Structures are given as structure tokens and as C-alpha cells.
Amino acid sequence: MRFCPQCGSPLVQGARFCVQCGATLGDAIQSSGTPQRARPHLGMSFYAVLAVIVATGAVVAMLVLRHQPERQKKVAMMENGTAGRAGLPPGHPKIKLPAAAVRYIAGLEAKARANPKDLKTWDQFGEAASRAALFDPAYYTKAVDAFGHVLKIDPNDLQALRGMGNYFYDHEQFDRAAASYEHYLKEKPNDPDVLTDLGTMYLATGNADQAVAQYHKALAVNPKFLQAYYNLGVAYAEQGRTADAIASLNQALTLAPDDSAKKQIREMIANIQGRTSGGPGGAPSSGASPGSVSTASAALSPPTNFHEAVEQLVRGLPVAGTKVQSVKWVSPLKAEVMMQDFPMQAMPPFARLKLLQQLSSGLKTAKTSFKVTQPVQVDLDDAATGRPMKSVVE
Image 1 (cartoon, rainbow, N blue to C red):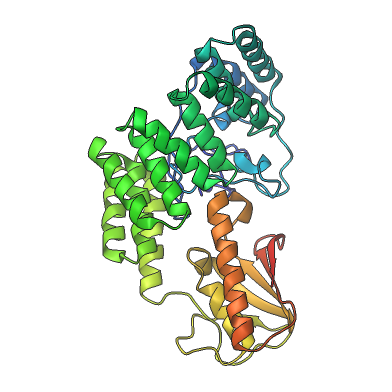
Image 2 (spheres, rainbow, N blue to C red; image 1 turned 90 degrees about the vertical axis):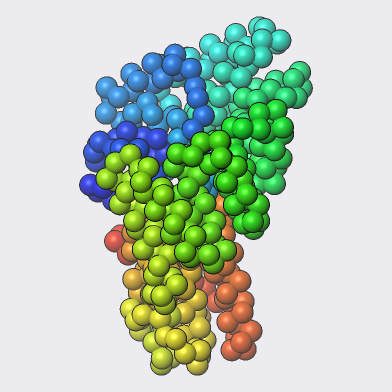
């Protein structure tokens, strides 16, 4: 995920300004170690309409673009599954789709429905609706309806195939997203953006080897494709190929467009190096009692009690573990984990799901190892605000 260099708020993919403080942004890639999806294209007429929004000071037109990262594991949805695509921080007021954009999309829809065989207009309608869904999730239905209409007439329509793939991706249906991207690539096999997206879908479903293969295909087509190098680094890191991961990220570093992007890539390299060198991890050697707080680095020895096992678990989580500020046991079966600079809602959906699955699985293992039979709750809280981000109960 990307964060504003001024106020630290999570950023919208492709945005030129921070919706929190108004700071001007560069095109830096996400810094969380999650892959990025490629940027789809929308007609300039839609951009022109949305550009009017800038004058309101509420948001910029680019919010509606999905400069998404190849699935770099992608931009975040809120707990309702869709509203957070815009990457707004928890508690941020809902941003209303501007009236000009509503009229523009309604006009596209009317034109499309009046001309059922005008697939170009249907594709434009679907693309515009999918962007509008960032503000109003109801537009997802319109987007799917539009792309579905096109595919019934032309199953090989590239824009509709990619649009459906992005929809499935956003809704964490990664196998179906991969199928859409694969179909697209049968018709246009040398599209580096979609090759990268497909690779990220493979990565999301645990097939790192296939992901690496797709990223290499993308780079064969476009040897200067920043996102493919970055995602390849993420995939190598998941395989435990640290040297290859760092080499790929260093290549991405040479292609980074600005200082912000370079900083984020360097942070990812440092994160990978920290994991392999035994960076922040586990818990103190003694058992923690209710009300106690742990800020210790990882203990290399096996845990001697359940609390130690859980603390080592959370501190050892990929990416998230390095953000653990402290672990406080408020009761024998409930821990509050304070996360520094780790907005849960801004995580790409599949990355967030994977993180929670790892935490859940680790809790089950720890309970079994120490014969804990009662439910255990681990709360992930934002250290800066104290606001709860997510709870896992096992």
C-alpha cells in the first residue's frame, strides 16, 4: 500500500493528491510488499468530467482511476468488501460520486441500452461504472452487467474480459479472475499489464512458481516494466529466494520514477533483508501476565508458554510482524497487538485475507501445542489512534 509522505494516510491508487491533507503525490508504487495491478485506460471524456471535482477540494479525478497494480496484490476494500477500494482511512467520511460523473455514466448507460450491439459503448459504460464503484459499490452491478452483455455477444472482447477479471479480483475471487485474464491472454498474449495481473492472481492462490513465470513473460515483452520487477521481487521473497528478490527489487529501483517510489522500494528490500537476518520477531522469554506489555525483539528459542507462542507468531508475520509495536495481554485469553504505521483497511484484499489466515492458523497451532481449549482473541489495533482494525478469534 502507499502512504502519504506528509500525513501518513493510506493513499488511493493513482491519486495525485492525498485526500487527507492535500499533499501532491508522485506515481510511487505501493510499499507494503504487495504486488500492483496494471493501469486500465478510460476515455478522456470521463477524465474531463471528473476533473471538475478538483475544484471542490474533496478529491481529485484520478481517484476514479484504478492505477492498480497488477495485482500487486491490490488496493483495499473496507470490511463491507467494496467501499474501501478508494483506500480511505478508517472513519473517513464517505466520498459521494460527483453529480457530473453520475450524469456522464447515466448517459453512457442510456446510449448503450439503446444500442445493444454497440459493444464499444457497452465497454465504455462498464469501465466507467467499475471506476464509479470506488465511490458507490452499487455501480459494481452495472459494471458486471455491461461486461457480461458484451461477452455474451463477443466472448473474446478484450476490454470486457479484463473488466471482469478486475471485478473478480476486487471481490477476492482469484481463480475466476485468473480465468478471465487467461482468456484475455489467449487473444492478446503479449500484454505485459495483464501478464502481470495474471501472475499476481497465481501468487494470491499460492502458486508462486506460476506467478514468477508470468512476470518473466511480462518483462520479456517490456524489459522496463517497473511493476513486473517489483511483483517478481515479492514472488521471489515468498519462495524464500532472498537474493533473487533483492536483485529484482534493485532493478525496479533503477526504474522508479521519483524519490517516493525509490524510498518505498528500499523499504521493501530492507523488510526482506530483515526477515532473513532474524529481524523483529517473537516475545520475551518469560510468560506475560494480563496487563503486561511486550516490545521485545524475537526470541530465537522455542516458546515456553502460550503467551510467548502467540507473541512470536504476531511478530513473525510477513510484513505485518515488523510493524508490531507492542503486545498486551488484557486477560489470559485476549491480546491487544498495537501496530505502527499499518492501516489494515488499506491492505489489498487478498493480502489482508492471507494475513488473517496466517494469524488464525498460527493461533490454532499455538493452542494445540499448549493445550488451550478456550477461545482466544487477538485484536490488531492502530498504535497511533488506538482504533481497532481487526480481531481474530480461534
